[in-house]
Image (cartoon, rainbow, N blue to C red; front, side, top):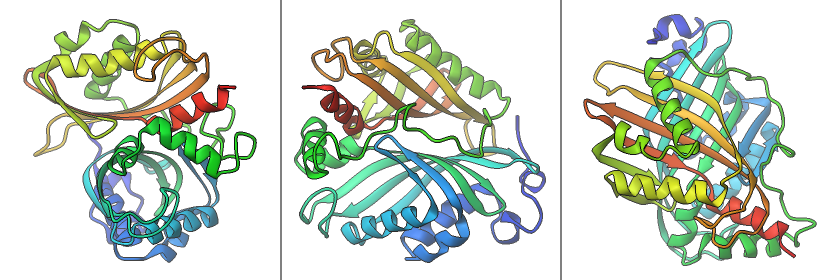
Length: 332
């Protein structure tokens, strides 16, 4: 389903300054981070915004501003390069966007990743946002933390253990996002009605239902994949390896599709965004080593583009460090 931006954006809001929703999302991101307009978060984020990342749940714009300042102190030259915005909406409900971007930054200051190392980083981010007017009120954010910590010489498992210790131990550390720590926000939508969105949802549902043969049926043989840890793959085997190792680690976890958006725009391939989750025990051998029995929540975001021979490019992210943190916290 194509959505006309002039009908989606209420007059006097986004349309006043930005030509469409992608221009708004990419422009606001640059203004906040690269143009040092941290104060504009008072205008662009709701006072009671909820920002969910696999690592934590942040409620309130003041805490978001604090976190933004801390990140810029640690990575003062950070750039955020927007690759795509997959979106939908309606005048009475606001607009929803799923934003894919590349972050370039130098670890020049002390912070959550330790003493300044001078390491030059490149990693991907996927972010789902809900906005009314020009204010974002609900957000789901997944950074490729696995890529960040590996570039700094650590494994996600090591980093998670070190973070727990630096945060004061298991009893006082910041708790990762789970259904128990999540907070309900103003957005309760499920996305839009789109053939390409339904197509991606069906593929992921089949994979999580152990129908791994769907990869050979639905993916282009020359598919390019981008997975956690900044891992680029090509072909069916790399896609199969990634999804098999994730599902094998949590074979009985409940898979749930949370949100689906599809678009078919001029000068762009048909593409879709799906936010999904796994919730269950780490009961199998797979991407996270020996089964620990820990209850683990995985927040995942997937973007995909389709071509004449099937799914031709896929980007999927989850936070490996947040998963390891949950495993560590459940261990003696």
